[in-house]
Amino acid sequence: MHHLLAILCGVCVLLPASALKHHILTKSWDEAQSDCLEYLRIESSRAVPFLAHRYEDDQTTKELIFCIALNLRIYDATQNVLRVELLRQFFTPDVNDTLYVNRTNDCLLRVQTPPKENSYYGRNPYVGAIESVHGIFRCFYYYYGNFNRNAPALPPTALEVKQIQQECAKIIGIPVGLLRCGSHLKAHPAYISESNRSKTH
Image 1 (tube, rainbow, N blue to C red):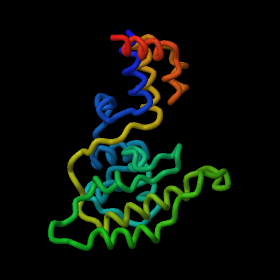
Image 2 (cartoon, one colour):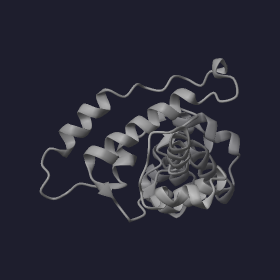
Image 3 (cartoon, rainbow, N blue to C red):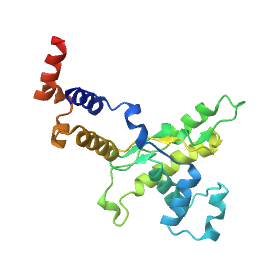
Image 4 (cartoon, rainbow, N blue to C red):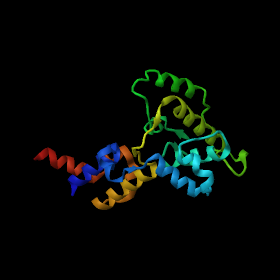
């Protein structure tokens, strides 16, 4: 039991990728786009260009790209973070193209960071984020490469990490509140007694 507590402490503090493997979600661009076409109620006649990966510079397209970015965890609304390294996974550069990184980076430097959500925008607090996500998408769409048809693994959200920690705590049988200690788990009596027991053997 105490050995399991020590393992849980390590998992909760470090959260290595292998511990999250059974929670990893994979999703392709097309799968996320299909979800978003439904969420946004975009009619099938209007969806034809999107299904062919043709994206214009209009509000419907911007909202679709933003929805896809949320769906694929490219944009984390809780942290106001655009994960460019995740977006990159959905594009494959041409093998003969040696300048795609430079072109993409030059474009990315011109994209503004999204402001924190703001009630100033009234009904849609994500106006700035929608513009930024669309701008970053266009950099990859025009300068990085072609769409990757594979479904890359998506990182867990902060909520999923918390749920994984809680599941581990339940399995081990320790109070979920103990997880709030973070790096102070080593000060817990069960951990200390296990450490002392290990030294005597």
